[in-house]
Each structure stands twice: as structure tokens, then as C-alpha cells.
Image (cartoon, rainbow over all chains, first blue to last red; front, side, top):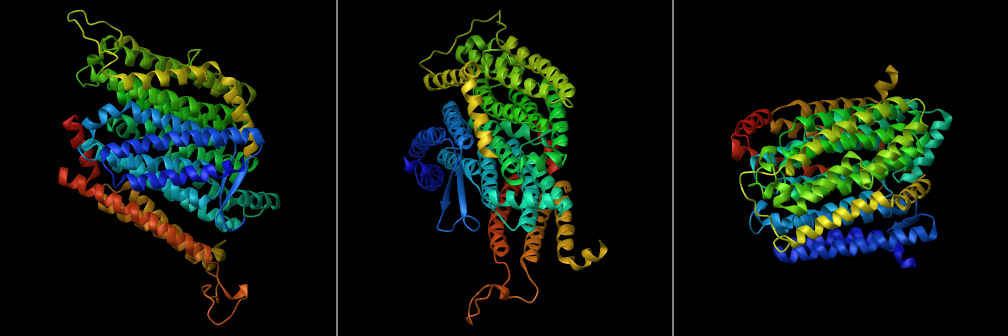
Length: 497
Length: 124
């Protein structure tokens, strides 16, 4: 059983090696390596999850021979293993869902680079999830940024390169702030390992020393990660980057990349600074405020949009707002709701991006709403999947979005000072979500009366249809049997602190 | 407060440089100037780290004449962090420059705002 303790490290290493090996292979071989890698990683993280549930406590894996205050560590608990498992599953489905489009979107003989980038991206995501060292986290944040930028610009047109440049600029601003905050924290505490920093910070706070520098460091790191995960005022790069890249890239970027940064912020809150001290620094109220603003303005921009993929991208801004609102509650319940929403949004948003491509394909490749009329009949699979995704985003019972909205409202009710604004904005945002998602669903099921349509058959798109079915099942499962997942998140959070 | 600022002038300079670099990266429309800003920003952080790791009157921890005492040496970890940081910022700058070349070949300009407005006109 103890061999499972090596699995987190093995899965990160496997991804890095797979990326390196794939760069010397042909397209087909690289694709197979990536698929096998993801399957192995799903198995490894499932084992890790089962093991942590079984032993009921987190375990630490020491990298190299140096013990705690000096060496580098990997730490795995229930929460880490759960997120790693989920990220691998979503990544596999997203890559499958966009595979048939890849030859059109990427230059010939360059698709192997796509798999190199996705392998590297997965390695950095897993490292962000598992690492226990702040500087390692920073390095993998940068690897994440570089590979995400590559995934945006691998589809060569003016729009994507411009989007990639804008994405890089915002990300670099964010990581600059993160690095500065990190250096200040190292300067204050003399440690780089999360658990050691936490002890020193608790000591500093108890003695009342270095109050201002500590708050500055916390603010710098939080703002840096907010910029990178596209919280409301920093979201300008997002619609272009998600709207014009390849379909798998859009699904992966929206559902995984920004979530990796958010998870790092959760780690900083719980494991580096300590929840109490972070809460007392009042930055949590600022996160709450911007989260609320993001929920409304993201949805308003989505309503104005006339391009289906950009609309889904703007909806991501609103959903990121939900997650930060959960942080801003400053309670365990709010955090649980946020983490559940990370999972539910990842499952739903990738489904929407993948389904949207099926709808636009049968509408002559146009993404304008007027052209989408009746496309739900022309591609039945994508139509149903898009409807499921929309219903989940709006928060209809049976689907995962409902559970996260329920958890958010429960958390809001328990917090007396923030209850009213949170519930009001939650209500407004739900209505706005309903407006633009239901508008799209009605549009794709409005029949075109003058011409006969030909619907695509299962045989033409078998892999794509199976991916959509898998996504729908995942969504409904999260919606119906949410209690085990919520329990795991709560257990993981207690284990986290 | 003012006295502290004077004794820690290295850190103060690093922060000012960081601000300059950050502002340039955020506000300059010209892509090359943005990349220069990025490098100033990163270098400022390295200056900050180096300044924090250095202890007056001590030397780098390379044991040559048998001196083993900890009091003789500076803290080597910030230097290690600077090295790692330099590797990261070199790769990021290279990627940014490559993207800039791509954009310049396509639009014959380095002005990001102009490129955006041209893209809007193309309506792609």
C-alpha cells in the first residue's frame, strides 16, 4: 500500500517525460501517448484518492534526501487527490471532444506540438495541486502560463496571436506580483515550505510583529492570482483567448487553467497564511466585492454578445465571480461551495465549449446566433448536450450547477453580514444566466421552416457523441449524487488546515 | 520610518524599479517597450532577493580555506531563487519576443492598440 505514496510524484514526472518524448514523435504517436498518459494519471490519482480516504490523513512525500525545512515536498490529501482526478478526467474528455477539429485548426504536421503542450500543461496543473513548496509553485505557475499561451496561439490567425499576447501580458503582471509577494514572505519567515511558513506567520501574528509587510505580502499574492484567474476587472483578455482558440484549448483553458490558480490561492489561504490571519487581513471583503461585481458584469457582457463562443467565455467571468464570492464569505461553508463550484463549472463549461463547436459546424461554421437557428435538429447530440450545459449553468435541479448554487445560498445564510448582498446578487445573476442561456437554447431549437435539414448520424461523429454523453453523465452525476463529493471536500478542507 | 528607508535603500530602489517595470508592462502600447518593462520588473525582484540574502561583511558560502562557521557566510538560498527566476524570465521573454515577431510580420506594427483596432475592422 505504501507504494501509493509515490504516485503523485510519478504522475507529475510522467507528464513531463511524455511531453519531452512526444516532441520527437509523429502526430499519431503523440496523440496516443497523451491518451495513455491521461488514462494512467486518472488511475494514479484515483488510487491516491482511495488511499487518502482509507488512511484518513494527508501524507507528505519528500523530494530528494533533505528533510523538512530545507528540502522540497509533495503533499497529498483528499482534496488534492480529488482535484487531480477531476482535472485529468476533464482534460481527457476535452481533448477527445476537440480531436476531430484539430486537423482544420492546427497547421499540418504540427498537431504533435499540441499534445506536447497539453502534456506540459497537465504536469504543471498536477504540480500546482500537489506541491508543498511556494517557489516550486511559482515555477509551475510560469510553466502553466507558457503552455496555456501555446495552446491559444497554436491556431494561427491574427486574432489568436493578439489574444495570446494579451493573455501573456496579464499573466506576467500576475506572476510578477505573486513572485514579489512570495519573496517578501520568504523574507519575513525564512522558509519556502508551506507548513513552515504557516508556523512562522502564526508566530509573527501572535507577537504583533511586521504587521504591515505581512498584509502587503498577502495582498500581492492574492491580487497576482486574481489577475491570473481572470477575476472581474482583469478579464479583458479572456473572451478573445477562449473565443478564437481551438475548441479543446478553450475547454481546457476555461475549465482547468484558471482553476489551477484558484486552487493555489486556496492553498495560500489555508496552508501558507492560515485561514484566521487571512480572514483578519480584510482582503477577503475585497475578493467578495469583486466576485459580486464579476457575477453581474460578466453576465451582462454575455447577454450583449452576438457570438456563441464569446458568450460562453463571458459566462466564465461570471462563474469565476461565484467562486471568489464563496471565498469572500470567509466561512468553511463558503469555501466548500467554492470548491464544489470549481468542479461543477469545470464539468459544465468544457461541455458547453465542446457542444458549441458541434452546433457551429452544422451551421456553416458561423458562430453568429442567427445562423445557429435550428442547429439543435441538425446535430441532435450537440443540441442535447448544449441544453444540459445551459440548464446546469442556470441552476436547474438534477444538474451540477443547482448544487453549487444551493451550497452558495446556504453559506450566505450562515454569514449574517454578507447574507443580503450575496443572496440578492445570486438571484440577479441567476436570472441573467437564464436570459442568455435560454435565449441560445430556444434559438437552436427554433425550426427553420423553408428548408429541409439533414441531421448528422451517430456514425459520422461517434467519438464526439460519446464524449458528449460522458460529459452529460458527469454533470448529472455531480447533480444527483453530490453528497459524497461534498463530504469529501469538507473532509479535505479539515485535513488541509 | 525615514531612517529605515535610508538603511534599506537597496530594497527601496528595487520597489521603485518594480513599479516602473510594472507600469511599463501594463501601460505601454509598444510591444518591445512592454517586454523591456517585463525585464525591469523581474530584475527588480532579483535585486530585492539579492539584497535580502546579503549580510554585510560576509562572503558567498564556498568553503576554500576550511572556515566552517555559519557566521562567515551569507544566506545562499536567495541566490538560488534568483538563478531559478532568471531561467523563468528568460524563457518568458523569448516567448513574448517570438509572439511579437509573429504580430509584426502580419501587421507591420508594434502598437498593440492599433493591431486590436485593425482586427476589429477585419471583423474576423
